[in-house]
Amino acid sequence: MGSHWVRPYPPGTGRWLVIVWEAVALALLTWATIRQFDLIGHGVRAVAVVLAAVWVIGAWRIVQHGVYVSSEGVLIRGLLRSRILHWRDIAGVHLHQATHRVGRWELQRDTTVVIERHDGATVNTELWAQGVDFHARPKLFRAVYQEIRRRHLAARLLPEN
Image 1: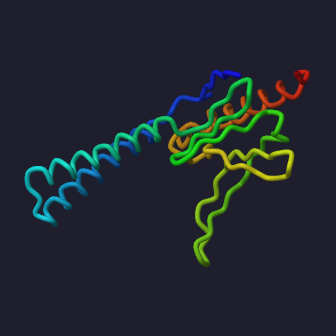
Image 2 (image 1 turned 90 degrees about the vertical axis):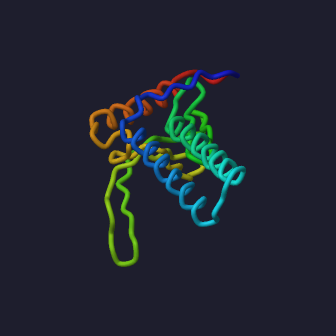
Image 3 (image 1 turned 135 degrees about the horizontal axis):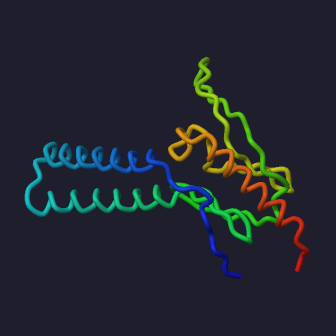
């Protein structure tokens, strides 16, 4: 069954800043590698091509990163992997207040969207209120959360085939 996956929000400007930041970091790594190993000719080209390819692949994954919905379910695209959760396997979609601890310190509390499966497991999404897509757009974060909940409810109301 083919699905038309749609990201229910436009990417934030922070995403593009991350891509530019990574380009600068890889350019500095390229320069440092060439200087450190006194590379010339083909060595310079090889390092530049490899790190440029890493940047292109990483930038593409950053652009595609996020949560998509369709009539089939939810597609979560992370930096390293993607997964599909079918609506029939989802028990609920909830907001979760996340706390990050490093040793004795409690860092940043933030609101994320969590999907609860029927088997009791929870799946973290790529949606968080202070993330690159929603940091300056809290109303959009709530609207996306409501859209995913609405689609989940609509899918539960449809008769099974």
